[in-house]
Length: 275
Image 1 (tube, one colour):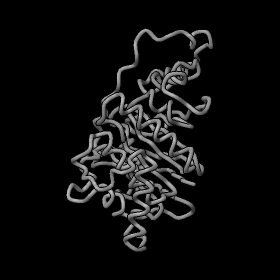
Image 2: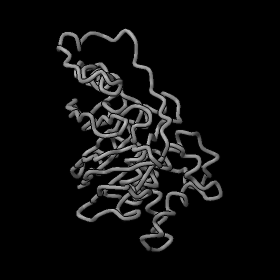
Image 3: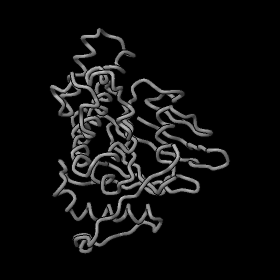
Image 4: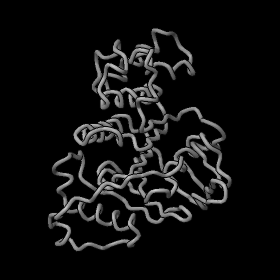
């Protein structure tokens, strides 16, 4: 279980997060959304132990986080910078496993298994620069899975890929979550994505940042890109999240209105917050 209590962080005299508290039970996938500069990535980096908050605490499985903990993996947006170009795909995936010991053969076998789980069987001997952007991000996800984390953090992991690849990777995350049962915290600026993949959507406000609302997502499983997004409950939830992000407050949408098709898709928010 992940427990965040009264988390506060500032950059100079600007408070990004103030007394933010959140509990994430084991096996839950939580999407985090909010306007630019509300502290989404800062929250994730505090959980990862990459930065030390000025107040509050983060506890993972009963142990306070002070530095990067064991049992945690992070997938960042910029996959091209997170993969080492001089190592093969297989060796990139196996690299973090050195921390846990084991033979080279065992690490490579675990890497091959993780690559197969993300649809990259047979790509282990290639190099990152020989792969498409979507395939490189799959490698980054495979590297996290090979580590067998109890908590997977994803910081806008699909922001740099095209729309079709983004949908494929969203479905991959749902598959990983279903098959592995791991706890996942996913930061995204895409409102539709937050509802599509999440068991729960947490909306952050800003000035200073904090949790504005938490919405449970009860959509039928398994989810798919066509029928799920056409579901009236999906339309209602993404409308409510959108209004919360834009500062208009929660919206109770009647079921009849929720069933009506949207005239325009919601534009994607560009997230340029400092991290």
